[in-house]
Every structure is written in structure tokens, then in C-alpha cells.
Amino acid sequence: MFSYGNLSLEDARQLYEMKEREEILKSYSFPSTPSKDGFYRTYVKDSTRKSGRRQLTAKTLEELKEKVYEFEKGISGKARKTFRDVFLITQEEKLKYIKNPEKLVSVKNTISRNRSEYKRFFEGTFIESKYMDSITKDDLENIVLMNLQRYDLHKKALSSMQSILKAVYDLAYEEYWIKDNTYSRLNFKKFSDLLVESVPVSERVHSTEEITAMMEYIHEHQKKKPDYIPAYALEMQILTGTRRGEIPPLRWSDVHADYIEIKRSQITVKKEGNKKESFKIVSHTKNHKDRNFPITDDLRAFLKRLKTVHDRFYPKSEFLFPADTENGVITNNVVYGFYRRMCKNLGIVQKQGVIKGTHSFRRNNITDVVNATNGNVIMASTLFGNTPDVAEKNYYTGTNLAVAKEALESRNFLTKN
Image (cartoon, rainbow, N blue to C red; front, side, top):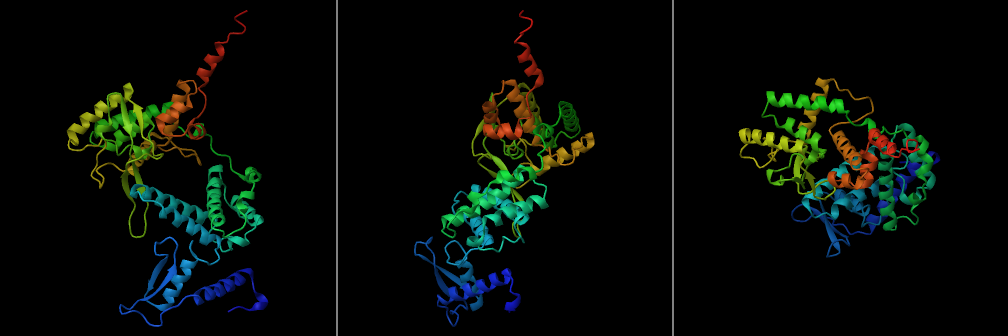
């Protein structure tokens, strides 16, 4: 297959893999003929099973040998692991220890996102087919540098790349596939000047004028089409700053005299194989913490209007925002679609590279609460379901200068004299 005079590193790797495969398969006893049902079978050692072994089955002998080798490349196998092998195992491991079917959906979405990020940063690169124990610190620095040079990455994107590297190396070190966790020796601060400046949070919100125009547009739309529920859902999102997925599952039983319970979410189930994208209601929020949101005068007036519409058009539904869907509620996408059409009709155009979307209303609400409470980030994070650190870094747009000026004016250094 190879001319040794022109042997490349990739050729050498393939030769090694062929030899390794040959040696591994020699340690197994394979049947010369299939069983009565026409299938070939053999057992592999598997410490994760109570019996200590697992049966592999295939229609052909070659297919069975390939399954054995693939098993050996997995977490329980003896085959030397490449970077790609270990990444795939990290994703398989995420699913192995999840019992709750609702959480399983969220984890599958995370895996889908991780695979997309892997494809972006590592697929087809020099590091993908390298064996873990042969990857040097220079290799890791070079792959980070290469991605920073070919893409305009913000800090968050770099963190996504880091998380993949960390997961791969943590598992490889834990399973004794490498003697030293090379990732832990990387200094990511040296790459800081290669990052693209993130758009300030203050530019990722809608102005008071824009929100006023939106509310007027929504109310006019409700008058013309009183049964169009997405318009009411968007209004509630503006008033409460809740996540898009927290709106659809709300039930009238969640609405109390002075507060609304937010304890469920509608999550998007990504397309998988022949299954189309779908939506599932789960009994938890994004951070798995229930919270109560106070009913303000504006929110109370809104709920009163919504109840009138609900009683007229959807009297049999327990949900605030019903629809003729599998879950009986509107989808996350339909609200966002209404938001986009509204912005287009109002002439609200986003700057290139600046993403606002309906999530921007969280920033508006969190900023207003922080400024109105003299900087109480803890209260804001509790109301909106974030940690204080996340609320401050990603949602707080800045100090209200008018309030700050009033506080400074109260000192009256000159007028006191």
C-alpha cells in the first residue's frame, strides 16, 4: 500500500493503526460459521456490564471484526486513542449516566451543539487523527492559534473551543490514556489580543423608544386579530424578561394573586436522523431552579386582558398561550417569527454583528431592576433565573447615569460651605 521512501506521518499513522487492529483481533476467537439465525457472534470484555462482558453480533465476519475493533477504540477498549476517538467517547459518556428522560433531551441538544463546535474547530485539522499520547503542548497552541487566525472569534467562542479541549484531556488523563494533562499547561491569556472585541451588552438591547413602538404595534395587532396568541406571548416576554422557552408552558394554575410561578420550559429537540425538529415541555427551567415573578400593575392589566381573550377563544385550555400543536401550546419559534416581522414593519434594523432578538428584553428588565435597587444584582438574578455573575456580565447594560448623578449631587461639597 505504501512506498516507504515517500512515507508521510499520516501514512505511518495508518500503518500503525492497521498493525494495531491486526494485533487486537488476534486476541479474539471468531466463529468460522454463522449461528443458525445467520449471524456471527463473539464476546468482548466490558467492565460496565454486571457479567463483565458484552456480546457483539453482525451479519458478516468482517462486520463483526470491525465492531470488535470499534469497541476496542471505545472507553473500555485497549486500542490507542486519537483526539477524535476521545472526543466521540466524551459525548457518549454524557448520555451514559442520564436517567431522567427530560434531562436526556437537554443533554442530546448539548451534544449536538458540541459536535457542531468540534466540526468548526477540529474536523479535518492536523490534530484530529493524532494519537492523544503524541500530541504536544505546541500542537495544542498551534490548533488554538490556527482557529483564531482563520475565524474572528469572540471570548465566548474561544471558551467553546477550550471546553472541548478540556473535556478530551480530562477524560484521557482520567482513563490513563495519557501520562500528563497537556491541556492544563496552556496559557490562554497569550491569545487575548487575537480575539475580536465583543459587542457591548449596552448595544444588545432595544431603546425605550423602540420598546414603546413595539408595545403600540402589539396592541394594534391584538385589536385586529384578538385570537392571535403569539402577540400576547411577546408582550409578556417584554414585560417580564422571561426566557423564550419559559413562556409557552405557563398555565393559569401558575398565576397567583401576587406572583407567577416559573417552573417549566419548552425546549427544542434538535433534528436527529429521520426525526424532524420538535418541541418538548419539561418540568424544569434552564438552571433547574423554580422561581416566582412578582405581578406588577402592568402585568396584572395584561393578564386580565389575556384572560378575556382566553375565555372567548380558548376556554378549554389550561395554558396561557394555547395553540393547535402536539403540546397544546405555541412554539418558541412562532413568537420569534412574530418579533422579526414586527421589527421589519417598524423599521427597527439591527447593526451588522449585533444580535438582539427577544432575549434582549431580559437585558432591559435585569438592568432596570439593578438600577432601581441601587445595584442589587442578587435580587435581579433571583428574579430572572441567572447567577449574579452571569447577570452582571451578560445582561446588565450599565449604570443609570441620572440615578448616579442624583447620588453624587447628594454629597453637596460646595453648597455646604
